[in-house]
Length: 214
Image (tube, rainbow, N blue to C red; front, side):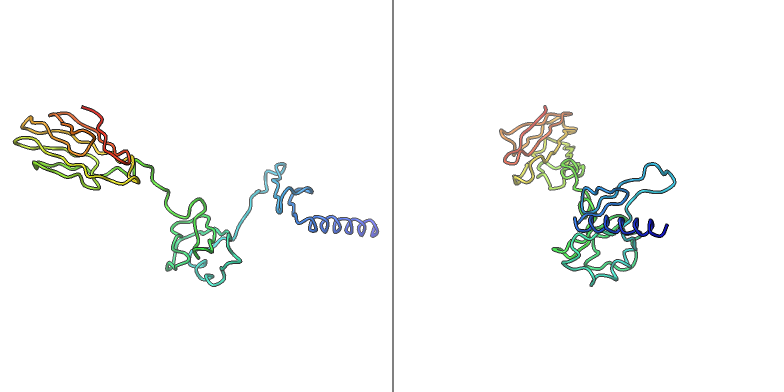
């Protein structure tokens, strides 16, 4: 019996050594397909299958600031709570979740981007609603909808030139003048008018303003 156990132990050790020599480690598998291959045990529903990385609060992570340098680039941790004082390395840790250490910037970054999601174009260009009764108005950087309420005559609305990076910027103009007079819009290709109780949509192409609508 002792010989059998000894033989089994030796064989297991040799197998482990062989796998180690191959530079691969397998969990729940004897044929790891990568450096570390963790295979789920689907036959045992009582045992959780997952990979647990180090878990700590922001304050606990910040206390280890000096421990993370070039050799730890790409290290993964799970922040359980945001507490304590923010440090230069934990400046991006703003909510519980997975973070990886980015050595080139010496900061922890959220898995998936390291910051707030980039807003879509509509969210970038959307601005405020501006109501003007002036006879002349220049479109502001945060304007999205301009409503004119000129008592006598119309309004001259000027659209300034933008940059190529602003392509897609959209501004709407609605004529609600009690005077029933049309607005004059300066800036788009070909000067356009904006009749009473009518709207116009103007879009910056990256080089010019173009007018859409009546």
